[in-house]
Image (cartoon, rainbow, N blue to C red; front, side):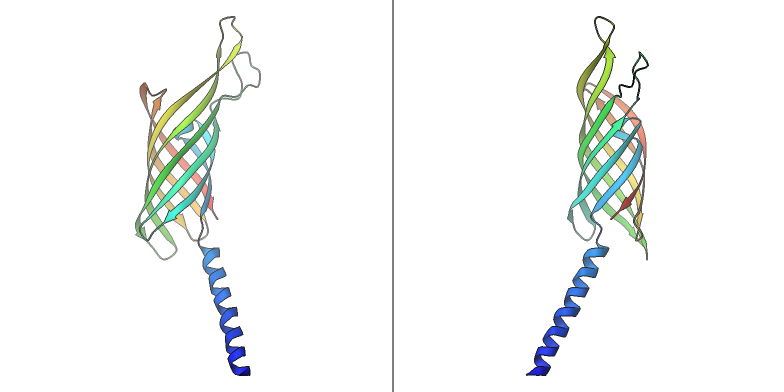
Length: 172
């Protein structure tokens, strides 16, 4: 009876350790800086993996960015951008300690930009822009995340602009 209890405890301890190790190596959150892309100049983004299968992942994204910090009167009054969207990552090549992915995304960027008002004073104008993105992404087991891509932006859903994007971040 004592052997059975000992084996049960031993099994429980090792099962708990292996589950904890699996959870610690399964990174579901990405925080990255992005130059270009939906925020046009620069943004910091939070991305969370919602669904993960063997060859693909579905991610949700939220970010905050800026185009400039000062308005035309030289006062600190930044233009703000808030990209929000979803992306699908397709695993292209798995190597020993890293992998290459193709990432395809769609979303909306909420913008708040300072413009000249009718009385020539700074006036904030809010709008929305759609975006799509296609990226080549490299990530490794240490958590390094690098992406390079193309992002067409549909400004106010009326005109199309073409932007490149570079992402550098960390997975945890």
